[in-house]
Length: 219
Ligand code: SF4
Ligand code: SF4
Image: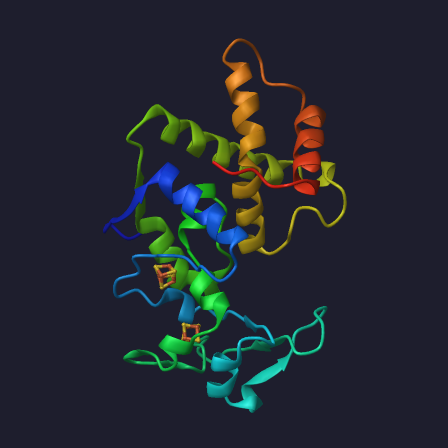
């Protein structure tokens, strides 16, 4: 575990910005990556949509293949034998100004926030930074929201079998994002529980399922 720590910013503003960016798909994440390039070297498949003409024009066709389960035109870019994105160079991303939206959206702080593991050994370059981030909690609300996010993630991890098939994503990134989106359910339960016990697991499960089917919460 690395000793160095990296400021991740106050928790609640980060959470709000992350959820807002999810609703405005071209906004992207504002991550203070510094010299880290973990996600360019972590054996990720990068999704590129058909409207991303600037990125598509700069990536050799031979590096792209159809994205399984998505409509025609959606493609994936793989990685080399070292796990590096083929667009990665020692000095950084060779198409940075035109990088895919997937790269613009990725924020590894979602793993720090939720406590969900980023993946296996191939994702070690990201896990290193995930362990270094430190959020701040300037108000009680920041603490409460973090507790709700953690509790939501832990509930989904511990009770995956209670949910309808396919609701809890296998992919850690998607699972972490779902925990962020549904955290308000647990926030409300925790608020009520100040005066008593938390509800039964099936009550929490039902509330999370309903929230997952409807408009997602915002902070
Ligand atoms: S792993 Fe995190 S900090 Fe590193 S480049 Fe990716 S998003 Fe930025
Ligand atoms: S396209 Fe650029 S930013 Fe995206 S993973 Fe590859 S090297 Fe990193």
